[in-house]
Length: 284
Image (tube, rainbow, N blue to C red):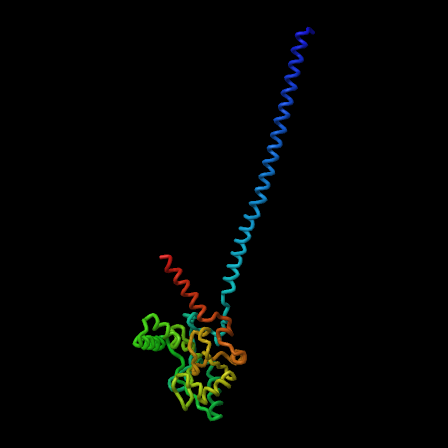
């Protein structure tokens, strides 16, 4: 091999070595860069993913809470005929039917409550207390007439029509929401005072009924101070048949029928209904 050939071979070897070294250098730099990018990406994921997961978890929790809240708001009322709840937020069922029985003076009551009613009146009479029925079963037309007259009376006193309806609804139930439609409600007065006002609570009849009516399946339906729950003002003359067992439990526990059957207070139910109505109106 000539000197020139050796010189070329050395130059070629040196070039290859240089190329290999440069390639290794670039490979090392690329590997370091790739490793750094992977580390940065992992760091970003560590920063971002927990926040995302927290948002998703919070949203899931909120949805679960809303669902639970909705389930808690649901009412599961008893279907027993004697415990049917009728008030401003629970209208009488459209298919409701009742077999009535005459109790004298043109009044009628659910036939299933007749025997207990007669026994109660006779028991009071045996103790020298005379109780009379002033109102019993009412059909829808009768209730509508009473309600409209009460609305008109408030209008003549200076109430707006809307406010007159609200006021009237606390004294005379809105048609379709009166217990008198059931044939289970009675307005009872004592012989010495027959007006339907709060003075009725001072009579012999009311005092006897308050003490003994539960023994015959009746309760004072609208107690004093419970208007937010029942939706009706204090009525010491309005008694409702609920059956012997329920009447005893309600009276001894000092409950309203709404509380006994697990229903929302009427004031709460009406507020919710108004809120829903406002929401519907706002969409138009």
